[in-house]
Length: 401
Image 1 (spheres, one colour):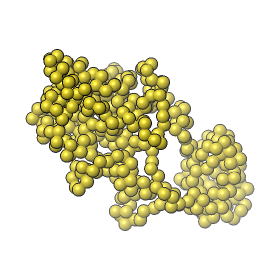
Image 2 (cartoon, rainbow, N blue to C red; image 1 turned 90 degrees about the horizontal axis):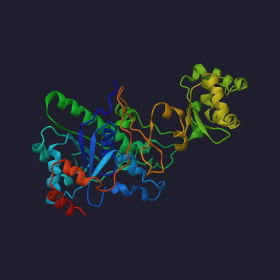
Image 3 (tube, one colour; image 1 turned 90 degrees about the vertical axis):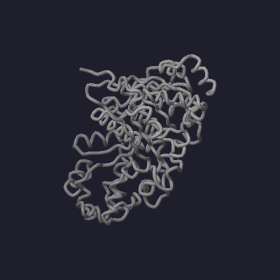
Image 4 (cartoon, helix red, strand yellow; image 1 turned 120 degrees about the horizontal axis):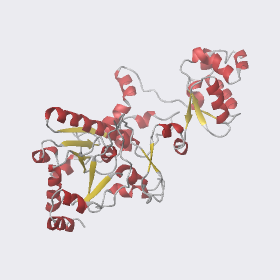
């Protein structure tokens, strides 16, 4: 039996900004939750992210489309008495509240878990911070590139040959961290089913970055030293670097057992004559002459386009890993086969597809993605559903122009 909306009837207040916490609410909306995006009168600042230099410019506001699909927008000035009272009344009937405001802001707005708990003891309060809620930097503003990428040590180790650190891709730490927020909410909902009580769950960009970098950090904790990627031409493992084909595409030959497969590999690519050269006669020799081996393989792989090498690898059952550009990712048949891209159910966007959230539940259908809302688009409807009178709604909207 198919359940159309596993979170149908669950009401979520998204009282956050930018990406990481709101994206957790997006995943809940995908599974049918009624997510109400609470925005200040000027709107979430993330609405203007696309206009920043260095990011793709499109007709569609793609950052907002991705993080706010299937949500309803309500504008409340939480600094005003009317706006705060409206939030409190929405909290009374909410199941979940998600926020990433820093502790000082939550205190000023009287929006801490302790402030809201008396209004609804079944509320699940999910809080994301940048650097954790304790310590000297609990209130320091953070983004994924600062807390998740740089502070975790990943920016330092993901570079080769002493190259400067890379800024990384936009929002990749945010979306990764949002999955942890989503998981925390689901844990709290399970606990509520068993105990009848709500709870506060929390995580941080830094904690998620440290978790993503945990293998290297654990190695150091066990007495090891940081291993930096050497220059490609000086890599000690010739089958551990990417190679470029004649059409410009790159790939990795994904072979772990080099000692067992070196001869087979050279035979498969039509280079068994290399075995007559003592430098390449076996895996040990090619490691000892790694730079020469890489140069030789560079010339070989540059002689054919990727499609021909792919056919050879498939024929000989040799594992490989294409280095896909973002454009190529969108044409990957695996994405289509596994429903990683969804059709957009709106003609107001030039885009016809959007990226699916990464979780699936067998027998459960996700909600078809609907357009991200305009600023305050649903204020009147949501407040009326919550029992506000027309006079009360008028007073609230007057304080939130």
